[in-house]
Image (tube, rainbow, N blue to C red; front, side, top):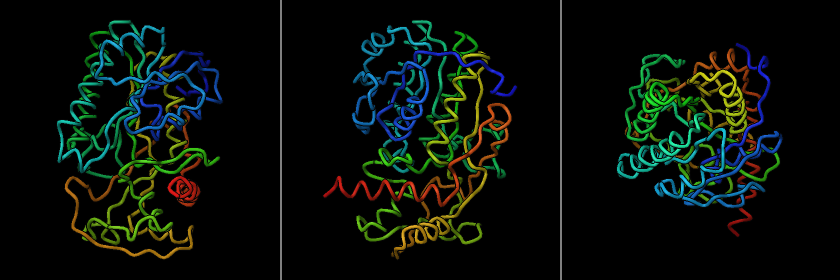
Length: 336
């Protein structure tokens, strides 16, 4: 059913992890709606200024009593962005990832079920697919994650299926491909410490904050030997969340959707595009492949396009890099 056939229900929504990168862009999108929105975040990696004028509940999901108390504020829906996302770190310290991404999420879900808050939008990942059997990857592809980070997200998706069957908790799980870019007004963008994502790392070289960009593996079975990924603008992600929660509130059916551009770019292609946008030369270093990096990940996005009437309006590669470059130049002023 087309999303446009739904009458939008105004809801009270708790955005968990709203002070982070994707969560803060979701809050910017909520500013243009009538939904009543509040934020829960422990500010361990996010920034209080990212919460804009929305009420912030400073809380760690490990604190079940406090989470329960906050959830007593009569929310209609919870949107969950709060997770650790560094694939490499998840190999080194899987305990950290299972405790936060699984155990703490379970705390949140159990409080929701106890309080009969039965609508949930979950930030998942294409990492649940592991090494894909084919590209583009549809939602029907088996979940066979090859790293602990992807495993934690797959576990939560499976928990959500069981909680739907047993408790009536309805959910939309959105499997992100490579989130990137920044808001067009330059007020927010990607700001991880340490930064691990390709586009901001390239732009840090362009701005002089880093000496060189490292390519991890140039011997993949791809056109130029480097990994191919599907890059999706963060505001297109935010729009998908908004459409997803609107559908969930009306249909009361749990669903899983890929969010990607359905177009893949190699690491070298991203570097060349960044050179063109910034006008800067960049030193490149080749290192061996990273553990758990598939050669190619590209989304089949037909399901979300047909069921939610979603389109990737901001995910032209030049537009993505230009918005991220504007943000990187602003970050330079923070670091002076």
